[in-house]
Length: 509
Image (cartoon, rainbow, N blue to C red; front, side, top):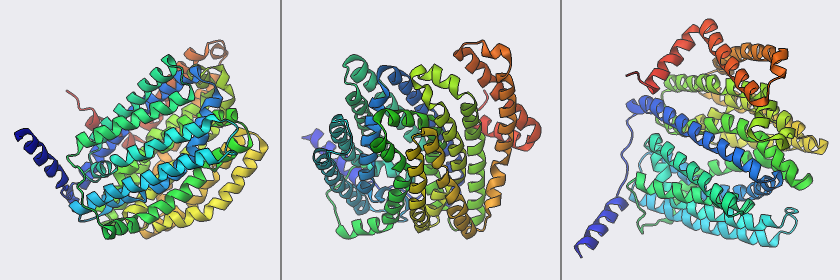
C-alpha cells in the first residue's frame, strides 16, 4: 500500500506540473544555446537519415519509395487537422494552468483517433488513388502514428516553450536511430520491403513519444473544458489554415507525379528532393522551433527582434548555401557513390532543388516571425493566393514529363512569398527586404568563388580519370577550402564572428 500511495502521489505531482514563464531577459541566451542544440540534433539526425537512405536505396526499388511517398501525401494532409495548432497555442499562451494542459492533451487524443479512423476508411474505399494495392495498407500503418504522436504532443510543446532543445535534440537522434535499426531489421532481415519502411517510422515515433514523458514531469489529469479547448483552437486555427495551404503548395507536385506519371518517377523525385530539402527546410525548421517562442517572448521589442532575425538568416546562409552549392556541383558523383547508378536520373532534379533551397533560406524564418508577433493571418493570406498560381506551374512541369522541370516549377513559390509575405511582415517590424538580402550576401559571394574553383578543378583531365568516390572527396575538400578562404579574405568580420560562435559551441580545453 505504501508503494501504491507513493506512486499515486508522484502521478498527482506530474498532473499538477505547470512550467514557469521564461524571463524576457534570458531569451537571447536561450536562443543561442537552443539554436546550437537544434542544429546539432538536425545535423546528427540528417546524417543518420542519409545513411538510412544509402542503405535502403540498395535494398529496395525506386517504386517502393514512390508508394510510401504517395501514401504520405494523403496521410500528412489528414494529419494537419489532427493538432489544430494546439501545440503552437501552448507555446504562445501567456498564462498556462493545469486545466489548459489537460484539456489540450485530451482534445488532441480525441481528434487524432477520429483522424486515424478517417484514414482507414479512405484507404479501403478509394480504389483510384494509386496503381499499387499496397498503398491502402501503408496508409493504415501510417495512420497509427497520429494517435501515437498525440500522446506526446503536450510534452513536446512544453519542451519548446521552456527552450529545452538539448533534450529535444537527444529525443530526435534516438528516434532516428530507432528508425534506422528498425528498418534494418524489418527490411534487411525480415524482408518486409515497403511495409518495413513504414514499420521503422512507427517504431521511431514510439521511441520519441516515450522519451517525451521522461524529459518533462507532466502527465494529463482527468480535467477537461470545452471552453478552454475552443480558446486554444481559436488561436491555433490560423496555424491550421497556414498548414493546409502550405501543405497544398508543397505537395501538389508529389500528388500529380504519383497519379499522372509512375511510382518509379515519384521515387526518383522524392530522392532528388530529399537531401536539398532536408538541409534547406529541415535545418530552418529546427531553428524555427527555437525562433517561434523567442519571437513571441520579445515581440514588443522590435529592435531585438530585427537583430535576431537578421542574424538567423545570415548564419543559416553561411551553413546552408555552401552545402547546396557543393551538392549541385558534385551531384553526378554524389548520387553514384551514395545511391548507385540506378539513381543517376535524379542528378538534374537534385541540382534544381539546390537552387530552390537557397531561395527558401530567406523565407523560412518569416513564418515564425509572423506567428511570434501575432500575425498568423499573413502567411495564410499569401499562401492561399499563391496556391492556384503554384498549381499551374507544377501542372505544366508534370505535363512535360521531366522531373527537373517539375523541380524548377517549385521555385516560383518561394520567390512569390519573398515579394509578398516577406515585404509585408518586414514593413510591420520596420525592416526592409533589402536588409535580408544583404544578410545573405557574404555567403552567396563566397559560394560563387567556391563554385568557380570547384568547376575549374572538374575540368582538369586528371580528375576525369578518377573513380567517383576519390573525385567526390577531392572536390569536397577543394570546395571547403575555397569557401573558407573566401570568407576569411573578403568578409573578415563575419569570419571572426563565425569562429567566435564555433568556440562557444566547442570550448577549448
